[in-house]
Image (cartoon, rainbow, N blue to C red; front, top):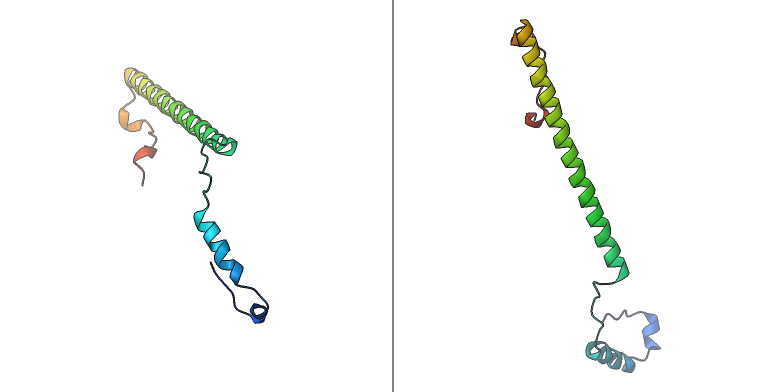
Length: 98
């Protein structure tokens, strides 16, 4: 327990401070409740956020796979009609970019 000594300490009765300190040490504190409504709400929000991010990652992967398939089909079609691969513009791979 911290005691600040100033000019009011002359009028303060310190005899009750040791009794209060003993009370603080001996009391049984209630445990921290992790099943409270606030904690459940926070966990629910985290779960929703994680699910949303997982769904976003899933659709982003599908999107990238569709783009790669379309590019492969376009290259195949252009090669079929006689356009060489060097003339086909390619998109840089963003996953390997620094």
